[in-house]
Image 1 (spheres, rainbow, N blue to C red):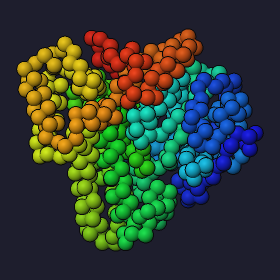
Image 2 (cartoon, rainbow, N blue to C red):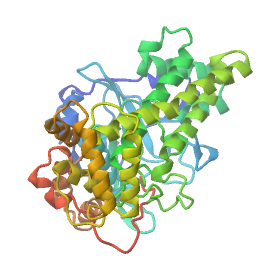
Image 3 (tube, rainbow, N blue to C red):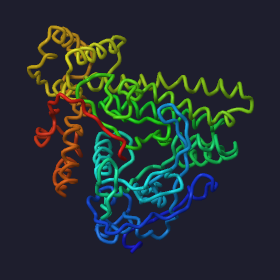
Image 4 (cartoon, rainbow, N blue to C red):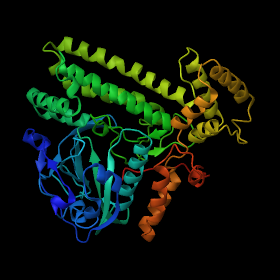
Amino acid sequence: MTNKTGWNLDNSYARLPKEFFSSLNPTPVRSPKLIILNRTLAKSLGLNDEELQTSGVEVFAGNKIPDGALPLAQAYAAHQFGHFTMLGDGRAILLGEQMTPQGERMDIQLKGSGRTPYSRRGDGRAALGPMLREYIISEAMHALDIPTTRSLAVVTTGESVYRETEQPGAILTRVAASHLRVGTFQYASSWGTVDDVRVLADYTLERHYPEVVGTPNRYLSLLREVIKRQAILISKWQLVGFIHGVMNTDNMAISGETIDYGPCAFMDVYDPATVFSSIDTQGRYAYGNQPYIGSWNLARFAETLLPLLDENEEKALEIAKEAMAEFSDLYRHHWLTGMRAKLGIFNEEQEDETLIEGLLSMMKKYRADYTNTFRSLTLEEREDSNLFGSTEFTQWDELWQARLDRQPEAKASSHELMKKSNPGVIPRNHRVEEAIEAAEKRGDYSVMERLLKVLSCPYTYSPEQSNYVMPVETTRPYRTFCGT
């Protein structure tokens, strides 16, 4: 089975000190059924997608362990809404690391695969709806060119899980550059030794940042590289209106990927205060706060590295502060560069930030849809709306056109840049819910399949997108839940 399927697993994480994980197998399920398989991703991993549809189902369900796997649950800690606690993979099992034909090392993790030593009082299982949600959103993020974990497959288990109601159980197979988190380092720092932190840092460097291993202070280089990747990642979130919803430190991946799609959603009406998560009652993780929370989380990461940065505690703290000071400038640079591209601007002028903020201010005032405003500008379609019908917009438009005229690139080039920078379609919240409801209540997966097809090419501006671009009119605020 294994040779035909193409599993080529290594287990470098299992070679770390035993304190970092617990070895155990997934809990078998009664009657697994494959719901969806990401065939393109499977092929890129060196897996036989035809075999995965048959013999692979038992692996996705946790009923069979592929050759070479050493299943384990990872230990980590976290600041959850600012409060520090011990955590770990409470319902996830890392099977191993698939070595791809391209020489990449990718974690293969089963999510919803049963209890672990870190489950606390949880059942270790997952419901179908949240697993489909993660599949849809993570694949949409990949298509939007945003670093992300990805989804290989979802299987139903033939068993029920009980949350507020009885729901069909499911397991998601998640693929990631790694599942190393800020919380992993917090765990090592709080419950391990300095040597444990050093071992984890060296492992991280070799796995994700080998190019800086030979630098004079490789641990400072590690900190700076993680800061750099997070600045890029969060700027990309902001540019498409993505709200993660639960930016706890265990949900910040050291690789720079978006990880854990619990209460996430995409913003419709532009408002920096937008919150979707039902448990974020104080707006800690609101859209406009995401860059600041990213910086706060990175400061917690820096704290774990202090003993490695310098033997002198005060000097180590100064080194960390200097590195942390780079985040805001890096984030702002990448965000401004992205916003310029969304407006077809190639070069830099000092007044660009004022131009950008002027548009955003109007969008907030007139409750304009974030994605569709930039879509309309890209298509040069000014539909009848409060924003486009205002005197303020007319004045802003004149400034924008003058700005475009001052750059050497032709208007046609600006138009193409905008098409590459402004998605024509995003995973609209009501469309995601529609797909999940059809699957849960009727066993109809065609709604999700059509949605995934449209989301796979967000920058094509194709006719197929037309039915998926509009938000839904509702008087009730949209709410999401930490179901994943």
